[in-house]
Amino acid sequence: MSQQEIKPWVIITIFKESINVEDLQRISPQIQNLIDEWQNKGRMMWSGAFNDNATGMAVFEGTEREANEVYSKYDKICSGVLEYSMYQWDAMPVLSILSK
Image (cartoon, rainbow, N blue to C red; front, top):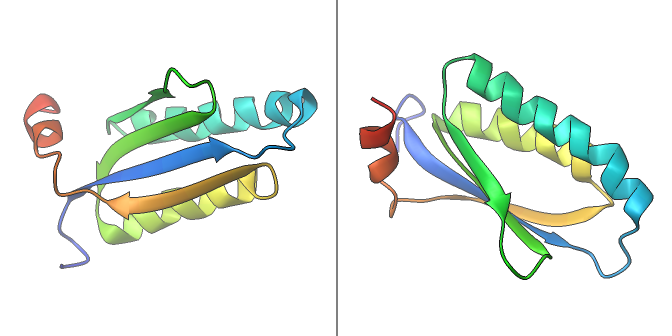
């Protein structure tokens, strides 16, 4: 995959068992700022929680470099509070269609 090729990416997040409300209140605005920053660039990011109230997902399109930058910022915000992983997701070509 080329560094310049735009692909869909997903960040899956799971609450740690020991999570506390104060930590969530502290990181929630920072996560929202990260999403807003991405969308202010004219880029789409869909995010939300699953109905288990413990798992969330953010889906966005970008180059590998851009995705790694988003993940690095997310890691700085959520480290020690949430468990999370990022994956390149070939199953979502619909994002390219919807973003146009």
